Amino acid sequence: MSQPSNFKRFVEVGRVVLLTSGPSAGKIAVIAEIIDHNRAIVDGPLSSVPRQAFPYKHMILTNIALTKLPRAAGTGVIKKQMEAEAIVTKWNNSAWAKKRAAVEARRSLNDFGRFSVMLEKKRRRDQVRKSLKTKA
Image (tube, rainbow, N blue to C red; front, side, top):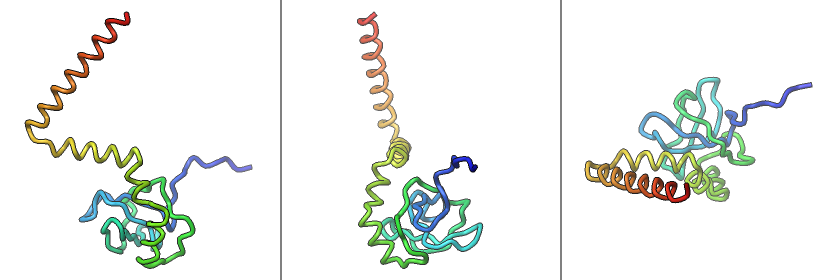
């Protein structure tokens, strides 16, 4: 009897991936075809990622996958299926994408922005402390 697998994300045609290097770093794409055990052809027509061979070590598999995507599907087919399944919306609504956006927004702050964040954190910390003091 086989044990259930702990792995949920597999390298498969239709799997949505997050690219981590190159000019398309930080964008999502779809695995269109598996080349070998090191590379796959990825395509991201809605996220402006050109169709290209990409190594697995420079991509992160997500939980999102296109259903019933044929092998070696062209850019047009992938684009239609991504629009039909609202893949970009699913990605943007995921906790992972929101966290990445928050980190990027925080990185892009200037000195005054960081100062304003510090003041807001102090204000919130003070309110929490006061509310806990009144309950105790």
